[in-house]
Length: 328
Image (cartoon, rainbow, N blue to C red; front, side, top):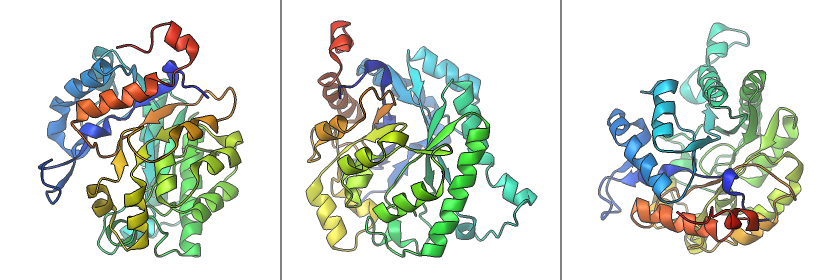
């Protein structure tokens, strides 16, 4: 399957998930979406996304922004929006015991309601839905042994699935369909966990919005997963990986960040994944969003966006190429 120019977007994570000192892999990890000072940098980054040739960007409204200010910023950059990302935490992981129907239990999903509001405001009817990724002390999946299903607990998984199902229901009530998003380091990491979640929550409530790189990192064949769940596939995150780093991180206990620091993530076409086979596995006529993600750039962020766009342009439909969408 070829890519459609109007259904491809970039997550500008190249500029967001960085080291305090890019030349020093031991320096602090920064997540700039959480930094209020990033608001001043955001317009310039979106302009670079557009200059690299992308016409759409993944929705990510900052906590310090109104919907209207974000709308103006995206419009000024000449971009449109692709579906965003929502996550929901397991209350027990935060020391909360919520009684069903209590005010606290209802309010637990306020962040999900905000994502529904954002999606509706911008005319988006799907969203990537994942469990929370925790960095709390003792969380082995992020801090000690990632991508191998560490500390699996069936009863906890049932609770995670229950929480995800409620979040999907909240989104669905607002007209936004959730797609299960697998992510290494969360409680939906392995193939068994993904399959149990999809089996437990009806397709009418929860589709599938996989990250093909995180599938591969967890030892899952992304082509097989896309074909198996073709009938409920909504949207997709595309990324490339250094599979040597993947194998090493799974063979010996590794933290999430140590694998990233060893160069796990690569721009599309610069890693070892067969991303063309991934695209070929998409259903005929599928019209979901493909969002390109490079969780940690292997080069300057703008250069990373250019490389990512070149990979996309080589895979656009013939019609898009004829319309000139392949150029900047």
